[in-house]
Image (cartoon, rainbow, N blue to C red; front, side):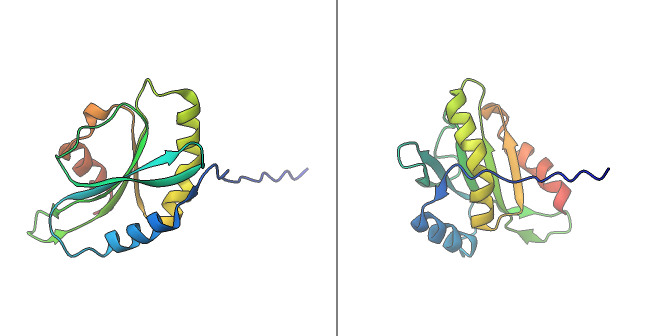
Length: 141
């Protein structure tokens, strides 16, 4: 007997069109500093929206779930410099279960919309460091 299994991705929240445009511009930015875009879910509208843009180091991680698109200046061992665009889904322990479900259920739609390939998840905001990111990026070298 041949059994087929169908897997699908449930889209909980759509991505705000203005955020999609901002992410597209961020992908092709010319600046060479580390920078990030923080996104959150508007629970009432069930929409992923911009929370803020910032230069890394100017904001403390929050206690709730969040999405981060991070442009990171990576210097390779041979001296080359690249600027990988990373998606980080932060889902710290202690978030409300309904919030965790909404963020987790909307993550794939956002990643597809922004056309991101370097996707990482972190549970403890204290672990989010340059060393952690370099270790995750080493897979893509």
